Image 1 (spheres, rainbow, N blue to C red):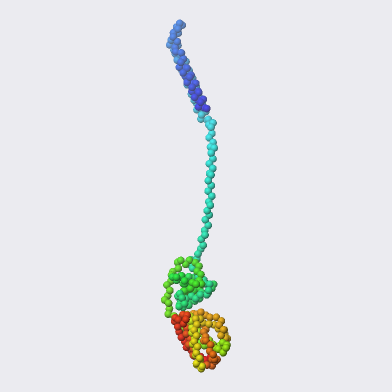
Image 2: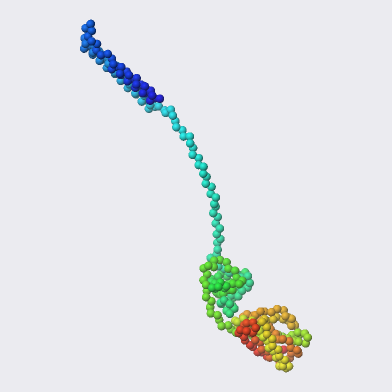
Length: 308
């Protein structure tokens, strides 16, 4: 609006200036014989006065307009009407939960059945100790077939021995265990002891003779045979079997039988029935034990003389 007023004032002042310039020129010397020079000077003075007044009015108008413009408050105020509202809200849908389980770096072994721990893998090797149920031992190696664990004996960790894996349970990291080469198979010590035990009345006029056998070597015995001769009557009987029977203390009734005799074990065997009471008679008996069933493999004989 101020600009419009300013333009209107300027236009008005311009018209005044134009009008001042159009004032009548000096009058001709009239009949009253007026001085031409004085008349012209009077007109010039009037024009100058009119021009000065117009210039003063113009200057005042310009000054007023500029002052008003300097203090003028804009009539239009811009107010933003747009407000940004985010329409996307991120909601995380994945929560990471650790599922790792700590595993012992040192593998440990336990057994479900009492197990011998040997100097090597198999019964041909000496027994160095025993792993009992409830004990745990450190595992330091394994066999190439992973059927034996090399352990530090629970009862004496200074002893390292081979544990059969049939009844063993290992916990811990076994990936880094070294594969241990077994020692050479020892030449088994072939030995046993035999002794007369008793004579039993088996009923019906028959008698049996019992013997006790102790395996004193390192070779396991799987079968046995007894040949006995009554030196008085010359009656002789020979009988072989693939086990070591256990009879009742009095009589010939079979209670149980051991399938074999390992190193250090004690078992029994007997003759077949004699038809006459052998009490007081001199006897000669030969007992054979073998490392395989059917009296095969490595066999050893012992002969004893006794009187029931």
